[in-house]
Image (cartoon, rainbow, N blue to C red; front, side, top):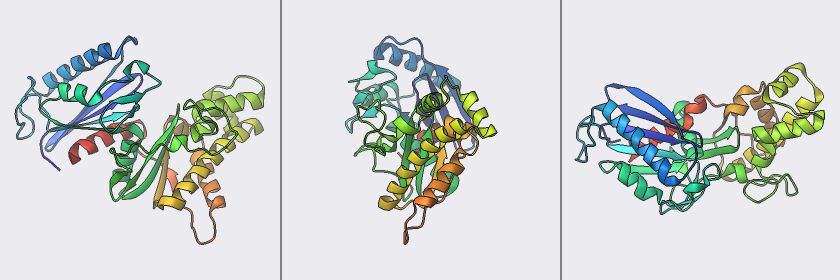
Length: 311
């Protein structure tokens, strides 16, 4: 790991978060919400303003020198960026449903322009969430799933994200678990995300109950043991378990962690997935342990810092 200031950047659909780490200093975190959508150019200008403010907070200046020590001026040794978009190995954005204006953007060039003094790397936010969760768990072979508005995640092998940024991200949310299942935003049907994400589970609960169901209503229904609520949640858990078991057959993680806002807020959800994983385990292929993730919404940001430390 290189010494000096390391910056993690978590680029989200609604906000961007920064975390600065440096030996001998307390970590510093700050975030800002995106302005109303207009263009990638406008977004990058807002991001540049935020980076300028962060540099000023860190000591002023843009520091395009070698950056020796704990960070001269406002410079950084290395920057890791967590991206929800699909980015090709050359650094060009292929698709980002939340901000389609970024499609075609040369992300690599944009980041080099923002951080000319630093080594810069980027990876999928789910991959980096897995990296951070693996560090926190002390596990060098780990599967992570984040269940929220979508389903993301990543796999860590020997302490590194798999398959690696040169080959693409670990898109477990787009593993097909129901051939004739619900349509997914990716264009296929029956992806894990289309069955087990928070919105998909709420839609299923609404159909079963016969009226619109909010997150809080589903949570209350689960606590009270309402059949419609339990059935909606069981189907989501079964889809996730099918994906976990399939990954286990191929890559043999030592531990599976499940996080994300929906999973964390729904009582007993991770336990449901764990029970179904155990039920699906075959003779001679013991099930991977399934537990709740521990970093919550910080996983991608912490993973971005971990990426920066590795550059």
